[in-house]
Length: 88
Image 1 (tube, one colour):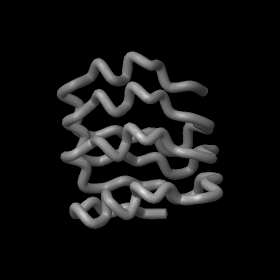
Image 2 (tube, rainbow, N blue to C red):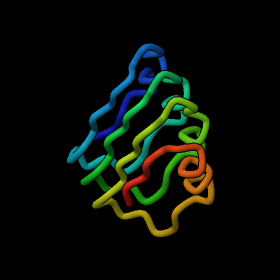
Image 3 (cartoon, rainbow, N blue to C red):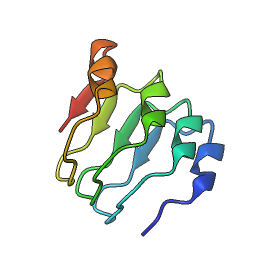
Image 4 (tube, rainbow, N blue to C red):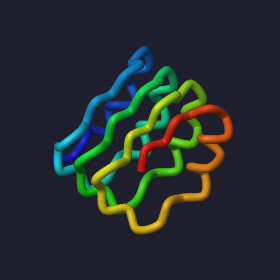
């Protein structure tokens, strides 16, 4: 399964639950959904994350558990420092 790039057009979207969808990648346009507060990506096949997620300034919770991430990007720490709960 692949998430459509038009996901970024959902500018008022606050919660995004994509758990258990076998996603291997996320589109960079996800960063345009600037009102996202909670993103649940657990149980997918993600090996990396687009940097655009770091720009989601309202994000309070990012669930990445049960994916195939090999190295956590350094910007995850910046998310945590500004108050986002990151579950890995």
